[in-house]
Structures are given as C-alpha cells and as structure tokens.
Image (cartoon, rainbow, N blue to C red; front, side, top):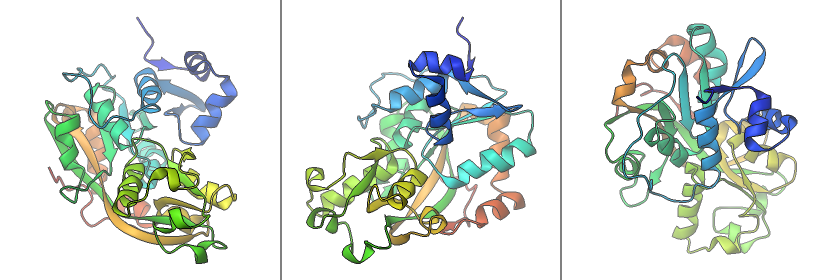
Length: 306
C-alpha cells in the first residue's frame, strides 16, 4: 500500500529531482506541503495532482465519472488558485485554531483545483474563473468540471486584479493593448490559472494574438512570483492582485474586481477540517487577519452563493 504522507527526500525521488529543489519549490509556494514539528511533510494525492496540473491545458475534465475521495479525513486538503488570504489562513489561523488538523494547500490554479475535486484529491478548491459568455465568476464552470458532483460554493472575498508594473516603465503602459504595441515584457501565469484565463480573455477582446506579446511564454505560479519578476527587472508588467504590488512598492493598474470562491463537495461538509475552515470565515480573527490586505472586500466572506 502506498504511503499517503511523504518526506522531502521521498518527494524528490518521486519527482526525480534533488532534495534542494523540493525545498525551493516549497519556499516559492509552488509545491504543496506543510511543516509538522519543524519538518516538511507532503500529501501524495496533492503531489500527484500538482504534477498533473503542470500540463493542464484542457477546459473540461476528460474523466467520465468522479473519483471517490481516499484522502485522510483528519487533515484538510485544499487545491486551486493562489491567494494571499488563503496563505495567511494556513500560516496564522488554522494551525492555532485547530492544532489537531494539518492543512495542505496546493497552488494548482483554479482549473487544477476543480480537477482535484473531481479526482477526489482535495476537500475544497479555491477558484476565480471569469466566464465571458455569462460575465459571471466560477459557477458556470461547475457543469464542465464537476458535472455529476453535488457541490456548494462559499464566497471568500472579492479582490482587485490588475497589471503590476515596474514604476520606471509604467509611463509606457496604459492598458492591455500596449502588450502588443510596445516593448513591454510580460510575466505570465501558468495555464489553468484564473489569472491566465483572464489575460487570454483580455487579449482576445483586443484582438491580440499571444504570439505578439513579448514574454507571453514566461510563466510563473503565484501572484508574488509575478511581482518579484517585475521587481527584479525580469519583466516590466504582469497580471496580479493589488496587495502584491503594494507590498513590493510597484505600480498597480486595476482591471477588474473578481470573486474568489471556495468550491466544496457536499459530502465533504462532514469533515472536521472543512467545518473549521468555513467557520473561521465568520470569525473576528479572520476579519482582522485578512483586513490588513489592501484590495480585498470581505463583506460577504463565508456566504454560501451556490
């Protein structure tokens, strides 16, 4: 029987990389893991899903039926979109609020999160997927990715999404059209992320082919990585959330306010970790922690929207 929990050395062997690269991926929030008594431990199902998400390009799940979850119910497994509030909850709230529950988060992108639910490899998924046809977020995608599952959707927050800019280059950039008409270098997000889908939609609206965008193939996996690429001069612009620009003292050009929601299969509501997480969204501790981040609207946090 396969071990469900892996050490860093075992993950390195599983991925065929050296152990130092495992720790680097964890530090960059690209590999799902958690620290227990100072040592990193990793969930095999989330690692497997993370590997698959790296090549996720399809908009529909190719599997004909959902997979029953085999995840340990005493822990909490979350997949999906990268978000600063979610990171803070894992680091500051969940560890102290319910010490018996170990939380694993995998930055697989929004589509990867829905795929993880379908495959039974996560208890909930964080998503922010704009649907151009309906001009709605998240819910229209459920019928494509979770056609047979009964799921609930809880609102986490609305957040400002826009272009993060090098202050010394911001005068040359007024909007998405400048990605094709100027020499601005883009840092992009990975396929399957809500941010990548939003950028592709914005380019399509302007009639811009990705091939005309300098830096379009330059992909990273988190909002902070976008900001750091701009800060280090590796790129001039990238699509990301406002608090990253504020934290790194970069320019921010707002594009939209998007919904970040949590998708939870109904059968997972009985899992203690899921209950603790959702209850925290209504707590004063959550409001204080998340309220420190600029560009977030928390007024409907925890509300069931589907």
